[in-house]
Image 1 (cartoon, one colour):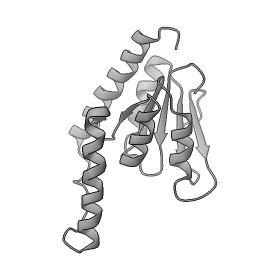
Image 2 (cartoon, helix red, strand yellow):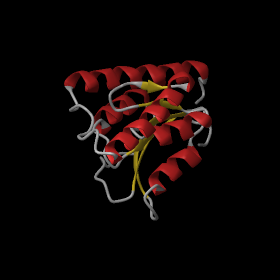
Image 3 (cartoon, one colour):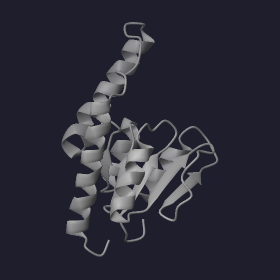
Length: 156
C-alpha cells in the first residue's frame, strides 16, 4: 500500500471485524474495512471505512489492487485470496485458516467443483456455522501475521 503494514478486510460479510480491530489496536496497525455499502466501524484513527462504488467485485478489486507484501488481507473469498497472494500479501480467512501459495490452488479448484455440484443440485447449503474456535483461531493467526511482518519490516 504505502510502505506500512496494514490490515485490509473484505468487509461485506466478515464475522471477525471486532477481533481484527483488537489486534490492530494492540500493534498500532491501520485497518481498512472495504465494502460495497456503508458499514459501521469504530470512529478511531486506526480504523477506516472504505465504501467502493461499482459492480459486484468492486471491493475485491480495491483490495487486490492495494495488496502488497506488507498487507494482511482478511477474506473468505478464495478468488480474492488468490489475487492478494499474487501481490505478496498475507491472507487469512475468518476461521483463522491462512491461505498460502501451497494451499490456494486446491482451494480454487475445490471452489469450482462445489459451484458445479451446486449448479447440478448435488450439494445444497453453505459452510459450517462460525464457531468460537474459529474466532480464537483467527485471533491467533492475525496476531502471528502482524508479529511476523513487524519482525521482517521493523519500520513497517
